[in-house]
Length: 173
Image 1 (cartoon, rainbow, N blue to C red):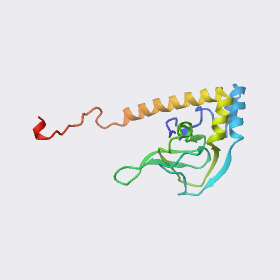
Image 2: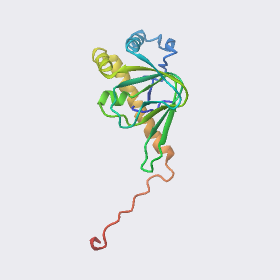
Image 3: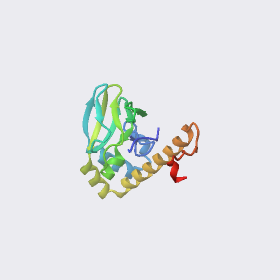
């Protein structure tokens, strides 16, 4: 699925799956850049129920889902979290936050045991500075994800476009 958090932002391109790099063989340069980024990762294991990151927490890097599934959710005023989506191998989480320096907009919780590869924000930003081609792949993915969110929003509305009623004090009318 392409629509993910900003940043799960899934794999930098839909065909870029960590376990399926042969799909990139036609673009050797992109494969080289991807491998350079992957070389910076630190493996992390999470058990079912463990949090990879939490809503509002400072973003310290990006997470590459190697195995397992994570539930991405956001808090609601009612106190119950709203599930945004469940992601699996091939997704890259937190790109938007790593780029902007903003805190995480979602919580990522392991549904089952997960193996993630973590890339520190500073290392990630350094790779982007020296490899503008990789930067452009990420920009393209972020754009695709944004358009996917637009589509998701349009197709999930029960009653699209119903205006809110304004309540003015009686003396204002």
